[in-house]
Length: 369
Picture 1 (cartoon, one colour):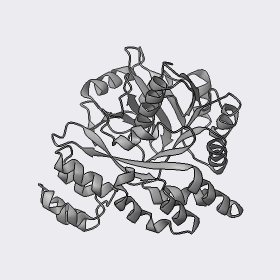
Picture 2 (picture 1 turned 180 degrees about the vertical axis):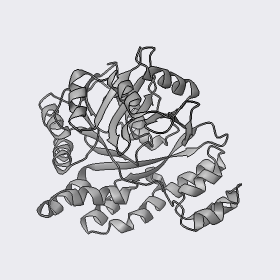
Picture 3 (picture 1 turned 60 degrees about the horizontal axis):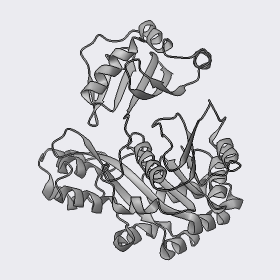
């Protein structure tokens, strides 16, 4: 058994989301959003490097020795699957292990609004799940794929970096391909997938112009494309897609978005009332004729007003979702205040009054991208 497995076992027993290993500090656990050290000595450079080397394949070891970061999935000896990032920094090696649940949660269990389930009824177009790192995008997409897999007869091709949740084919066939193992890039993965009779293509991240271009082509030619971006709202997502492609493709991109983008779901994770977990809170934009016109006429800054008035289409802004969750006693109002845009609406719910002046003098206004 690899020595690092002991830390991973401890972390999963505690219910943490991530285990952090870095030189000069003890192992750290991400518990309900907070980073907590475990009772262990500070890790030494050679010690941590030996821990990491025990779980690397020869090709991964060679790649890492060339100075490259590594992203891969790892299954511990006593069970438990993890998404791993290994890197080098000024004091030596570092590694982050994201715990991946063995069971794929349903969209209902995740507490996502009904519109997210309804989006899975589409047969063509693009759905984007966005948010900063660690906000549960992969979990939401896994739940959507599991719903499609359980209820429709489809060929689903999932391109991931690395493979996280493992899907067993049910009513559908699910093919999971890993960046660096099965495909050289997301763009090449989408290009190959389009020759494999897909109904649904999941693109782990729309991280460059070529991947965005290929994903757009797939969505335009009769496929349902699911993807992620590290953006913190519908407006920023649309602007990022438009800006990612060359200026001469700007009008074509706006046309695609107005016609083929189905929805943008943006997530944050907020502590629950009892403080023993976190719950996804989402902003939802569903494409309408009004929003399509705002995109084609370069008025994306007006989209928030459409979200605010678009409840009949399943749309909501973060503040609306946060207020609803507070009133349902699902989230901690103090944590909700941190993520709120219009903080005045949330001041009356705050129980820890020390949060108010601290947040109003330059604290974080919303989850970062």
